[in-house]
Length: 115
Image (cartoon, rainbow, N blue to C red; front, side, top):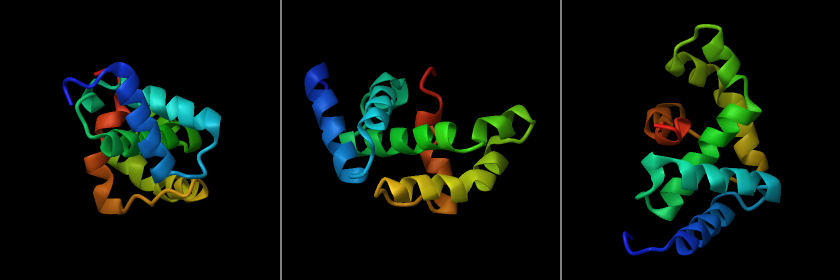
């Protein structure tokens, strides 16, 4: 994958997002794709992995009260627990698989795209 060019990477991740969340609105798809491509932790991930992690992180930050809970002093695990139902409702609306409670730790990579 190191030889993969940026346009090829963009197309591969975009295709993965289409498969992972077939009802994701175009505007949201663009934002998720940008997040997946900007995250240093996702640069070498398989397109499906990058797409999934970026999708979940985007939905968590934009469509739940996750950031508000963090600002109120909740730790990351507690905040994730409290927003899981809202997160999964958003993912379901997009045709994406839900996040099981125990899988949340594995999806941390995309939560901090600036790291």
